[in-house]
Image 1 (cartoon, rainbow over the protein chains, first blue to last red):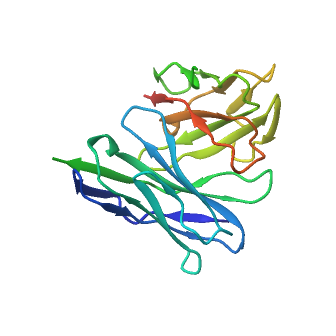
Image 2: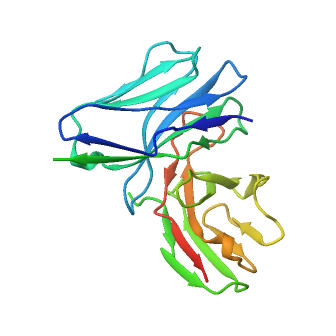
Image 3: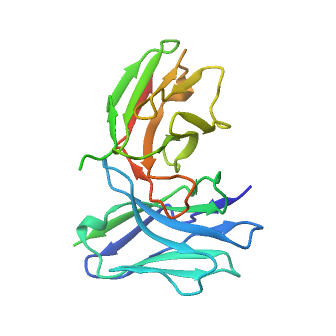
Length: 115
Length: 116
């Protein structure tokens, strides 16, 4: 079974600075999909960014980008120009190929943004 | 456009009592998911529906949990009887077609259950 590990329970960043959240995963598959989700306090979880494992190019969505290292099974999230609204729990998730596959989430990293 | 709606938002019950959670997915979304999120953990899938068919319920504790999506639209998740360890947040999510990896899952706000 696939596992997703987020080794940083909490991170803190100053407003306008850059922060990187770590994620590693374990799989024997060669093709799969990776995601970062954001869960603000008492609000819905939303998708931040996604990456297809067969694509070497790292995904980017505005201030959010990933560093995907397939051989190392690492999928980190970089948030540039951090804003107060970025404060949330961030979950890394894995999905294998196949129509019946499901999302496997990590334990999350709580990001604090300070002035 | 309304998002995924869940009710109630909070529920406090005593152990051994029954409880039910309701979810209305985004209009037109064929796939509906129920997740369990324990404190300090990521969500774990309980059951997934494609229209009215439960296509993955392998993680649903069937001795006390049940779910239904009779008309392929809204869904109810029930626990009977509730145990102390069931205290958690129950999330509902929906997507247009869950068989496609690139179909985004949209999550509801969750129901926070406390069992005393």
